[in-house]
Image 1 (cartoon, rainbow, N blue to C red):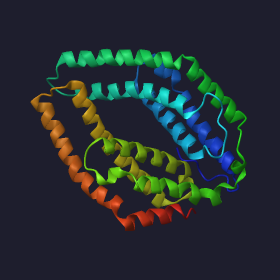
Image 2 (cartoon, rainbow, N blue to C red; image 1 turned 90 degrees about the horizontal axis):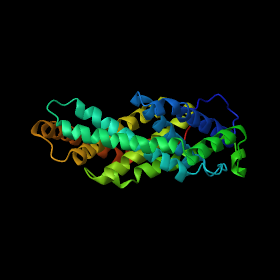
Image 3 (cartoon, helix red, strand yellow; image 1 turned 45 degrees about the horizontal axis):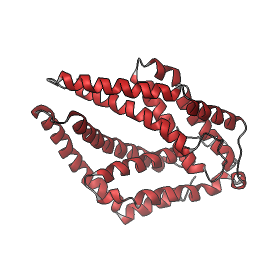
Image 4 (spheres, rainbow, N blue to C red; image 1 turned 30 degrees about the vertical axis):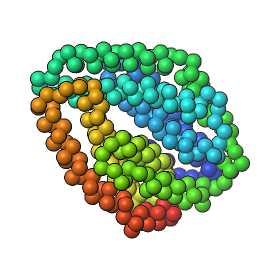
Length: 280
């Protein structure tokens, strides 16, 4: 969801409006398909749209005045509902592929999924979600900017981008091999990736390559978290599943060691900072 460099004299507030409108449309168009609940993909796309919107609000909140009812807390509640159902969809799909899986475990997870979806349905039909959509729809038509929103965008890009890299590099997860801290690192990587995508049109191939690398890291850390969730949901895993998970974890450890080393390397960090500081 890159915002292309089509407007060389664009102001910060105008750019924010474009990004927010795109993110809003991304999740809003999936609502009806999500409520039909015949395909897991619309729910996934709605969740991605919500995440992008949240990343946009984190990135540009200093430059605009958001509408009432469209704060981070409101988006967070809805995102959590989407996430609960999505996580169970992923888990059920993974377990359904395994031979000899206990049908009782699958039935229990399907019941949890049904309950989670009922909660999501109430949320999407509730006042908070309606207020969020109405507020964002009105704001994208009549945006309200702070004074800084009138600044030219391009000269401000290094000031916007460099803090993203710094927050990522300073995360404690780069010093960890396992544990909850890696789950938190995944969330930081994901947010930085979305934020970098907003501005990718102002940079070149190096930025595109970095974004692709962040996506790979995000997916690998997501797989690690999926295995944690799977163990918690299933409880005692049989020997076949245990062997599969052990092999995946060993492969992750082998892959993760050089990635950690790369992101702890001062020379690599300096190259990223130089890239972020020099839009085209």
